Amino acid sequence: MQKTYYNPADLRKFGNITEWDEELGKKFFEYYGKVFEEGALTAREKALIALAVAHTEQCPYCIDAYTKDTLQRGVTKEEMMEAIHVGAAIKGGATLVHGVQMMNKVNKLDG
Image 1 (cartoon, helix red, strand yellow):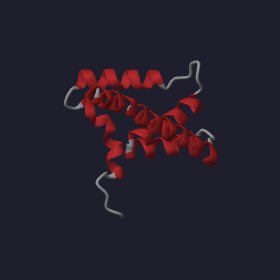
Image 2 (tube, helix red, strand yellow; image 1 turned 45 degrees about the horizontal axis):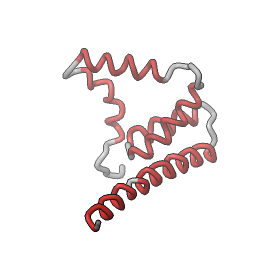
Image 3 (cartoon, rainbow, N blue to C red; image 1 turned 120 degrees about the vertical axis):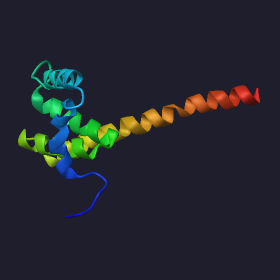
Image 4 (cartoon, one colour; image 1 turned 90 degrees about the horizontal axis):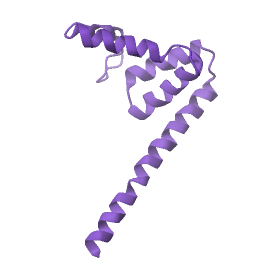
């Protein structure tokens, strides 16, 4: 088994977060479950969004979980990669647009 900082087996322990604060843990899982219910978006669409966000947040546990989930929901490899590129473009754009903040500060200091 490859050694990594993140232990893939720890994903199965996610539910254990209720052990040290049962009330908040249960409230989180209630919210989490509600978010992923069918609504205006299908469960498939929500899983694809979650996969893209997992990559922008760089969460290996989420990447593992939502890669499996999207595949089980019939999402293709091409759709998965396209969603990741959308997330990367937004993350890159969000980083670059903050350059305007830096430019404003430089202009203020130079002015």
